[in-house]
Image 1 (spheres, helix red, strand yellow):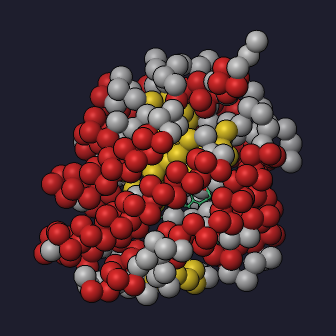
Image 2 (spheres, rainbow, N blue to C red; image 1 turned 90 degrees about the horizontal axis):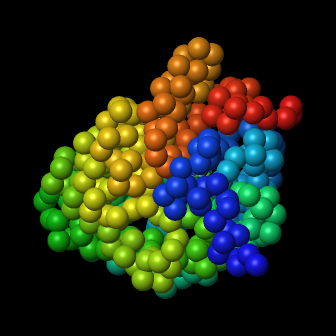
Amino acid sequence: MVTPNQKKITKKMLVTLNGQKTTTPPLWLMRQAGRHLKEYLEIREKAKNFLEFCYTPDLAVEATLQPIRRYGFDAAILFSDILVIPDALGQQVEFVPGTGPKLEAISSFDELEKLSKDGLHDHLSPVYEAIGKICCELPEETILIGFAGAPWTIATYVVEGGGSKNYQKTRKWAYDAPDEFGVLIDILVDATADHLIRQIESGVEVVQLFDSWAGVLPPSQFVKWSIEPAKKIITRIRAKHPDIPIIGFPRGAGLLYQRFVQETGVNAISIDATVPVTWAAKNLQPYCVVQGNLDNLALLTGGPAMEAEVAHILAAFADGPFIFNLGHGILPETPVPHVKKLIELVRGTSVGAA
Ligand code: 1CP
C-alpha cells in the first residue's frame, strides 16, 4: 500500500529536494506567471489595480495555473507578490502602472509603530484561500511553491518607499543604528515566518525566500541582514513543519552563497546567472540542492546562444540533485517559443502546440 508520504515523494520536484538525482532535472521558471503570457494580460484587466488582483482568489488561482497549462512545468508558484507583507502590516503600498511599487516610506525608528501584525492573517486570507483552490486544480505531478520576500529585501522597499538603485537610505540606517534597524528586520522576520507557515498550512509543498537585493551587502552586513534573518525564519518554519523543503535565493551573493548555505541550512539554493556553474557544482551542490541559473537574457534571445548556455548548465550539475530555473525572473518580452525550446532542451521531449 502507498502511504500519502510515499505518494508525494514521486513528484519530481520533491524527489530532487529530497536530495536524489532524477533522469532529467525538474524545471520551473521564476516569474513564470505574468506579463510574458498573453492570457495573463487578458485577466490582468479584470482587477482595478495589482494588489486587488493578488487579493482576488479566482484571479490569483487562474494566474498561477496559466503557465502550468501552457508549459507543464514541474512546479507552480503561487501568484502573489512580496509586497503584500508591508501592505498587510499597515503600510500604504501601491503599484503605479509603468513605474512599479510605491510605498509611504518609513525611515525612522518612531515611524515603525505604524506597522502592526494584528490584522496580518485577515488581510492575507484571500492568499490562503487561493492556495486551497490551486491545490485542488493542479495536475498530480505538479507541486505548489509558496514564497515571501526576505526581510532585507522587504526593508529596502519599506525604507526607500519603492524600488531603488543604491538602497542608500536603508543601508545607511543599518550602519548608523543597527539596533533600531534591527527592530524593523525583526518585525519582518516575524510576519514573514507567520505568512510562510500559513501558506504551508493552506497547502503549499515548498517555500522560497526571495532576497532579491542581498547582493548589495558587503560580507559583515550580509551576515547580519540576510543570513541571520533567514536563519530565524527557517527555525520558526521547521519547528512546526520540519519536512517542508525551503529554497533560499540571496540573489547576487557571489562567494557568500556558500556561507548562506552552511549557516542557514536551506534545502536548496537558487543561484543567479553570474555564478560560475563549475564553482557552484563543487562548492554548493555537495551540501544542498542547486536551482538555477540560466540568464533571463539568454532565454529572451533564444537560438544557439541559449542552447549553449543550457548545455553548459546541464553538464555542470549532472552529477547531483538539480532544479533547472533562471538566474532571475523571466522578462516580459520573452517569446513563448523560446520557453518551449528551453523545456525541450532540458527534458528531451517537446511541449504541445498552443
Ligand atoms: O501585472 C503587472 O504589471 C505586475 C507585474 C508583477 C507581477 C506579475 C509584479 C509587480 N509582481 C508580480 C508577481 C510576482 N512577484 C510573483 C508571482 C508570479 C510568478 O513568479 O510567477 C513573484 C514570485 C513576485 C516576487 C517579487 N515581487 C520579487 C522577488 C522576485 C524578483 O523578481 O526579484 C520582487 C522584488 C517583487 C517586487 C515587485 N513586484 C512587481 C514589481 C514591478 C516589483 C518591483 C521590482 C523592482 O523593484 O525592480
